[in-house]
Image 1: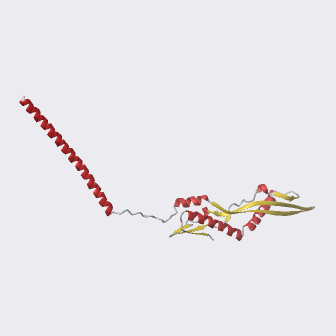
Image 2: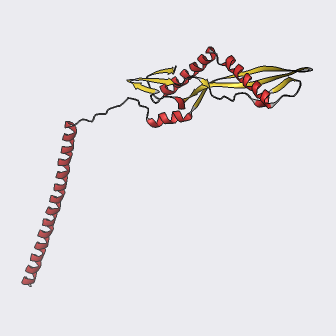
Image 3: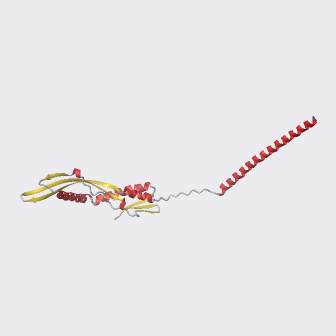
Length: 214
């Protein structure tokens, strides 16, 4: 009986020692992990103290080739429209009388620019200043007479298509002389300057200079 009791006691003591050793190993492992975490944290704090984070703000504004191409592809920009009406008359003598034709032509001249005609360097950035050089103001459409509104005011005799075409061309030239004045061109340029100035200011340019090709 004593031998059996001694055996059981030895087995019990071994289990207790094994359990204690396992507990020590577990504690040592946990301590090692905690220590590693403390060392890592200390290294990160030291690194943050020795290094600073610098934020660089680039306030320089550039126009990309894609933006330039998109603006040029818009093509025509209208800045002033002028409605006009002209009366054209012509006469033709015959053996026994005179034929006469009087026609009234109505039209609207649209003054503006065609950015497709702008030079490659029409936009120049110098420091914080953008210089914009626009093409000359011109009529955007040569067919500005409204054929539907053209009417014969007085007509005697028979007139050929060639005679009517000559009157049409005469009306166009007369409308151009009346509408393409220095005052109207200056007004269209002024409107263009305002629109392009506001557009590029909205894009962030501090100073914008708008001029025209001469």
